[in-house]
Length: 112
Image (cartoon, rainbow, N blue to C red; front, side):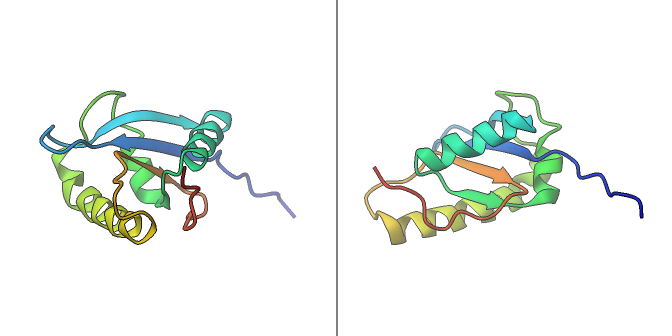
């Protein structure tokens, strides 16, 4: 039986500040870099969301560049979800960064 090769984990970090235009890609990577992005996010209480398709599209965006207009709707829905989750956890803080990853969803981030 042939072994199926798994592609390395990928992760993309987005930053969004109100009135600053579209969200920007602030970190991205595969394999160990992706693992470090996800670990840092979790260590800092940033929500990690799983979306293999969205990560694949965002990997094509250069660092420090805004997301393309074709992804506005998907990212807006994700950010709305993140804000709702944060309001449940800590009503007075709103994260400026979300992490997209094909890994598991982190529903219980650390709060500092």
